[in-house]
Image (tube, rainbow, N blue to C red; front, side, top):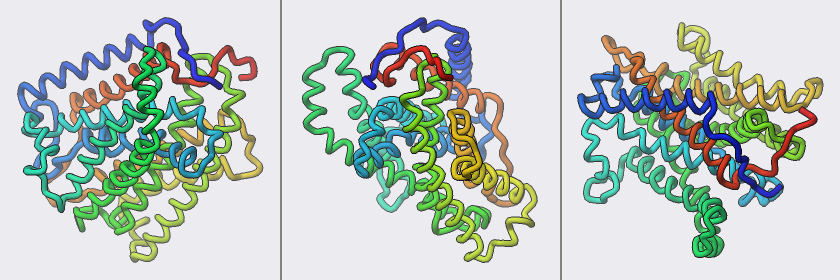
Amino acid sequence: MKAQPIGGRLVSPVTLVLMVLILLAAFFGAQRFLFGFNSVANINDGFPWGIWIAWDVVIGTGLACGGFALALLVYIANQNQYHPLMRPALLASVFGYTLGGVSVIFDLGRYWNFWHILFPTYQQYGSVMVEVALCVAAYIIVLWIEFSPVLAEKFGWTGVKKFTGKWMFLFIALGVLLPTMHQSSLGSLLIVYGQQIHPLWQTMLLPLLFLLSAVAMGYAVVVFEACVSTAGFKRKIDHELPLIASLSKIMAWLLVAFIVIRLGDIVARGAFGAMFTSGVKSFMFWVEMTLYALPVAMLLSPSVKRDARIYFLAACSMLLAAVLYRIDAYLVGYETGPGWNYFPAVPEIMITIGIVAFEILGYIVFVRFFPVLPGHGPDKAH
């Protein structure tokens, strides 16, 4: 299954819609940088982190964990049969992390000082935020280096290919270490909030729960991506289906571990009653847990038929659950005190949608012109 460019037309109804969304985001983004974020966003002193941080960074980097999750399997667990899925997973990770890192600038009041985080004289070493920022910045560089063989193969950069071939083991090691650190630290950030986070989400196990959910999101994204690219580009899926099936099963067992730890922790902390008596928060908690449980039922029940549609639906449910978990933990479960509330403004949402559209457009361009996806062709079976 050698990777090949898909080819074909770049201009299509889908890419035109994506371009419109990107232009709208650029318009509102220009407003934000010219007139300040209060001109486009509802974030305030009570809710200084809105959807730009919750989605673009906390969720966006989780959705970009496909490369990290597969690296654990391929390079750490030595399961080389999954290697054909590495390039598309890495591509999604490259765009997800790069745009997540860039989007932080939208949330910085004095954005022109963003470079301070990279200089030791400005850093506060006891801050979890510093660790997250440095790890994410370093991981973006590592991801582009890991992805560089694709560019070298396309443009004939033999020097780059030799360099990465010699030192790739080092970058793979960093590519496993860095996301392990910052994905768990995204949970640690909430521990610092203390009692401002509702008991259904506040726990000392947040680093473990965020890391587990990130790995599961990584496998779910790889499955989702394989299914969508198969339908969108009319590729054969037969040769990838066994890999998707086994990857889905790994994801299901990770979810079992996550659910057991999450529920056990809530009971152990004496927050059992909060699951039923916290109004909207209880409702959001049960929606989240139901979405986590559905893939387990679909993938581990012997009575459910196993085919690409089931794997796709299970991956969608898993991704929705993880997205909701991170939104709940960062926004819904955040209680900053009376008088403060937050709901994202339309321009704020449009900027986030534009960033997602840019990521999807970039993915389409790359798979059409670069050797990213494994062998393709018309799918007769599906």
